[in-house]
Length: 294
Ligand code: PXP
Image 1: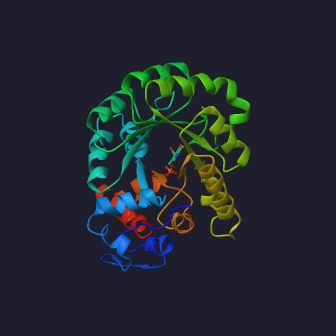
Image 2: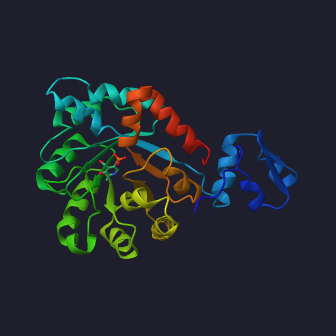
């Protein structure tokens, strides 16, 4: 999926040109035609673009719903997810994600408004495709909306949206969000028919549901293979590939090794670890794991 970068420890140039070598300190080019490009990162970027070598850009968006869950457990004003978002960003996260549920059981409208004003990275709002939330988002304008199915009785999101069944309802929602210049992601099962339907709906991103994988990841490779193949299919369809649900510090590693996705949406494991390490430290640890594969 993603080839190695031209700089850093990756050896992408080797594939691009047999006469070029690379090392940890950068690229050593023996070919005179390439040597003159070796002077700056900008030149490397131009070469990568020219050779159509995509850089590995892995992003981590941390879901901070459970900071709000703790606040709501006592109907207090703390811990505040807005303050938590700042700590997450200090830890090096590339984005903040919140799920604005219809019952507002954890994240509230106030949180999303304040996060929009304060998040310096990227703000993603997960939500059901319902009219009042679409209207609210076209006003607040997060960077991305991830459409998810929502059941009143569920503890957390369980399945991906069935795009084959929901197409007629989702089409106008995707259009309205895109018109407001919000990137649209669809949370789906790692399944070819669902991925193709996401492309037809005009989504820019698919988030592959890793719930089943995260429960059975250490019992054979079937679930990982399924995700890997879905990631490839989505990428071929021109979709950005994200993964999320149930990922933690251990089960994320095979997904990274297989270069399944560029975007990682991880919440519970990071917030749970933060109880011991602090939020910033918990994010630093996750980023450190991801950086091995960047
Ligand atoms: N992606 C989606 C669509 C979700 O609904 C959730 C949970 O809110 C996550 C990712 C994060 O899952 P977890 O909290 O298990 O890391």
